[in-house]
Length: 398
Length: 72
Image (cartoon, rainbow over all chains, first blue to last red; front, side, top):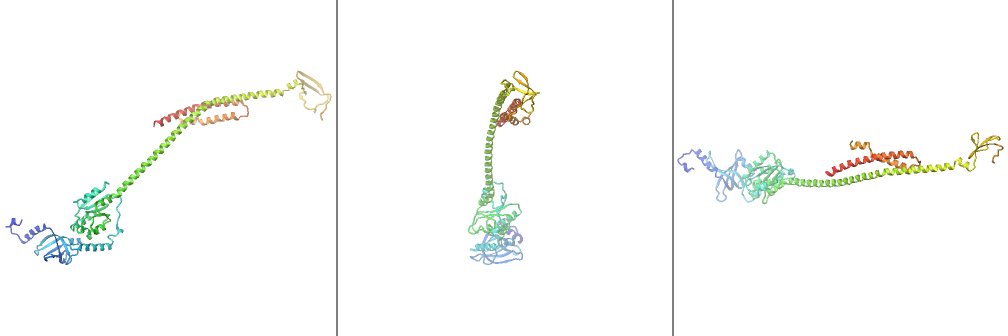
């Protein structure tokens, strides 16, 4: 570009701007030891990075907003890796490396930083199990933070059940210090969204690649997130502090999906159990109905039998009454015959025939000598006529 | 006349009860009262005739209901 316009004459300002355009695209990762570091009035950090071998030096700047992000204190002698691009500061003509991100590069430094931050946050209770929230039952709205590149999101989506989830995803870098800004921004976005659970997932990796998940700001954001957070960010040896701060930590994206499915799967099982129970109960009802139906049919038959028996009985009844009445008439006839005999046996006529006489005075039958006087005329009734006789004497039996 | 109305007016059980009473009168009667006996027989004949009619009606209704049940 420069060669094409060799005839063009630039002002210094124009030329510095021109250079800066080229330098902006010269992004690079550099590693070195911090020489001196000082904070400017606006909080930006001005420091030098020195080559360990030959002492080559580069002026560097990290803006305060970025510096606060990474939780690393720049001190002389500390070995760091910075990512950024060079830039010429026009007023002084000085070239500086503008660091977008910084991370520790010294052997043991990462581990030390990790341990210190872990210990500090532990003391604050950030990882306390008492603060862990359970997943809501039947989560529906799911927020997912991960990189849309790679297999992780596919693993998650392939394993999440078909329960009508409303899944919102925010694409974020998940590796290297540059990921911190993305992750923080994604979490802040989800804070404003209506979700039931937040899932942060990535594949496994080395401690270096997972260092972004040991960022203090990120850890605090996760711990203070308004709804339960599932972290499936994998780990090498040391568990990322973000995972420890999450409410639930799982090892893989698949495990995160399964966890969200769990209450729904249980609900499905419950439904199946209830369905079986209902069907079984219906079976019992049908059995009972059949039993009652059969019983009813027998009752109907019995009723029919009763009608038939009653009919037979009624058909026989007139005959029975006629017989009974006939017996009654016979009994009556016998009574009459017997009565006739008795009367006949006791008839005075019959006695007259036997030689007995019925005596009366003026129609009064004589049964005693009392009230009879000598001279009374007595009527004597015989079988074939009557005679009158006078009382001559009266002899009373002693 | 509906079945229930029929049953209300012509209670088969009442008739059977009366026939039973007449039967007992014949079994237990110590007096030989032929005239009353004839009245009882007359009454029994009427009751039997009525009862047969009622029973026939009941049987018919029962058969109708049974047909409906069997058809289901």
